[in-house]
Length: 193
Picture 1: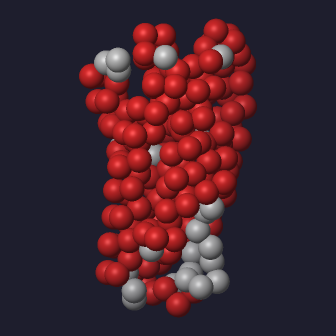
Picture 2 (picture 1 turned 135 degrees about the vertical axis):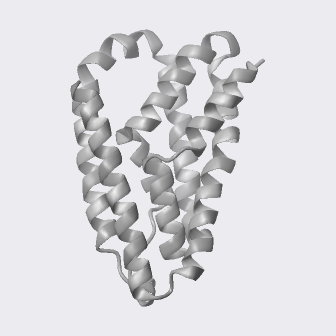
């Protein structure tokens, strides 16, 4: 049986801003809700896979995590900065047909370098897998994570209709890119400290 605090933790960690949610909102604005769904499900599956990996390899992960934490953070942050640049340079509404949203596989694989996702998966595995079992935690995590990330994709989709004017779209993409840069800087600062 999953502890009630599990649901609270996963909901808070899934709904608060982070790389996944910023990318989902931006994808919703630029591509719409329906075209963002593969990314949503990829993120959910990637987070579920991380939870299983963290739960099954907890002992190894704890000793190994210290040595890979900084390189993983730097790699993830470098990718986030590249994504920030892509967001900043994202086209106007008439460019929608040329660009493509992240795929299911892309969303799932992105979790491998997403420091916030690793933090969530590791904490969930540490706190809940021992008592509830890895599979119960994984399915519970995915069930709680999905509505949270769907909300960000839907928010982006709704904002998209208000951002049809090119300068407004560019302003939104610039703010989201800057938010991702700030998030990345904060993660790098925490990793190095």
